[in-house]
Image (cartoon, rainbow, N blue to C red):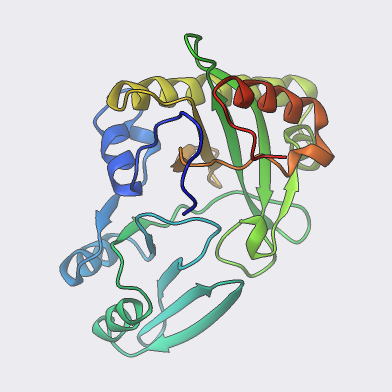
Amino acid sequence: MHPKTYRSAAIWGKKRVCRYLASDGALQHLVPQTKALTMNHLREMLDHHAVVYVKPDIGSMGIGVNKLARADVGYTLYATQWRKQVQHTYATLTDCYKAIKRRSSSPMIIQEAVAIDSVGTSELPYDIRAMVQRKPGGPWTCTGFMVKVGAAGRIVTNYYQGGQIWTLNRLWKEKGYDEAIGSSRTEMLKAKALEVAQLLSRKKQGMREMGIDFAFDREGRLWVLEVNSNHPQFHPLKRIDPTAYRRMMSFARAYGRHDAQ
């Protein structure tokens, strides 16, 4: 992690963010079940979920993320290693746990795998980053969105893992939604993003920005997959949505951030 050179506090740790969100009656239904990685917790989670994700409590760019699924015999473990994805089958859950621990000594979390929605004939998974910012002394504002569309066969949607960046309008068109449905979904995302930002900023003073990763599942239910409040990235929008990019930069400059050029 690069040291922050501008004034905006961050909440460190995915597990802590999930705990804060799960403590709120209006937001708890958005949070996948999440536990710290231990052998006992891994066994408990797989007793309730056929597929789970195991990922760094503090991390970015999709690096070090694992997807663990039951197989006909044993378990299949998919893992991102820098920009590659590897796959292994293990006979026992203990073997899976040891393999994950060998790759990383940092704290990890286990999270139920959300069966996220897909787009296009190739059925590519996607999630939606909502950028929420506030100028000093001002209210939280949802300054825009970018859609992360995962590469075929990848367990994460990140741009750095082969994904694409789309605008929200392109997503709605690719999904075949008319203007009314697209507008309704956009407004719902804005409202939920502001609720998340307001809650988390009550837990940590001095926050100025956060990137909230939402996903719809195949049944249309909305989830919060992750909240990044340390250098949330929006620079890919400079080319595909310059209006949103300029709005985000205007807010960012107000609290001293100039590194998203």
